[in-house]
Length: 517
Image (tube, rainbow, N blue to C red; front, side, top):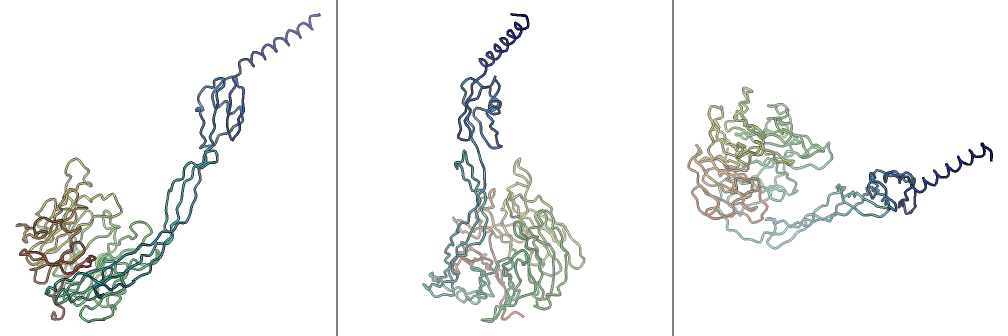
């Protein structure tokens, strides 16, 4: 064998030895993916390397066991689970509900179908997760109303017989979306409206009780106003209501002499709560034509903190000023001078929801003072906006005097000033006053001498917020308890139940319209 041939043979043997050595050092790994099972040989490395050698490409949601960074070992089995996520939608039927309302206009025991029930429809979206083509998870992620269900409404005649109670003046109240009037005695009541579409934003008797001012909701798209302002005469049976050319109303009130109407407006929005307040203020004559030429007293503005909810207003007894309340402030706006007096600033209450807490206001009969519930200071180490405390304050309307007359009365204490004192609610659980029931407390005009008028002894109190209306004489008052009207007396005694429907709200009481001029 010559030298060249020897070198060729030697080189071949070396290469063969190296090749056999590599084969002996390769690691066999089994890869299971996409329904296939294959074995690959790799010289070492991680699970990721083994998948690459097997030609398996991973997607974002796929799972691998063992993890990709694990070093391979001989005989290791690598499982690849294909994970897929998709969204599916379906339409579902939302069944209507049946509501039974008590209608005092119907004879006892009589039943009448007021509205047919209709099912609604929702679109439900699900997130579906599949593993290797099989569904392993199906979760509902959203539900959008396509068509709201329409309740079936059945009216039944009142079954409870209550003794007729003599009454002074004119009483109006809201029941099942309609306005009712009561005059002479509690049995002499009749409906002023029958459409059932009063939204309760405005519900005010004129000072002489002859007219009721109210709002009816308007159904429609984003271009449709929230509601429309109406008025109806209370002294004539069967009198047709009068529509006023004012729409999108959050607040409206009669002037103290009953000759003018003040109102504030809002625009409808697609976002919660469904409106955006303009916080404007207009004053016009109480006439369907003249009110269209109303004077703007306050121009549209942001309204301070949470102003989109809408500020509250209250016309002073002498008719020269308006008290206002917003989420962080109470004050007085003088119409003649155009000046604004801030009575008190406070931290707005954080409701952690879509609604906003705004203080209720009440003028003293002489117009010199205002009563309001104010958000209090922190109880402990909580944030100032989370304080559970709400106190009752009295303010001189010119800003010269202010006094806290009661602590921890609750957010819905709702002061009502009458001829013989200041009536307000007192939360049974003052530290959780949002959901607490309330007792009714009467104080002297200076805030002193508190005495509980309801309940007399042990009792549950009224639901929040307390709804109260003073009689023209100021000796008696109406209040709502468990959805019914009761007549209380400032001198005590057991309140007299006036209604039994369980659907009463917004009681209003005015002087006798037939004799008041």
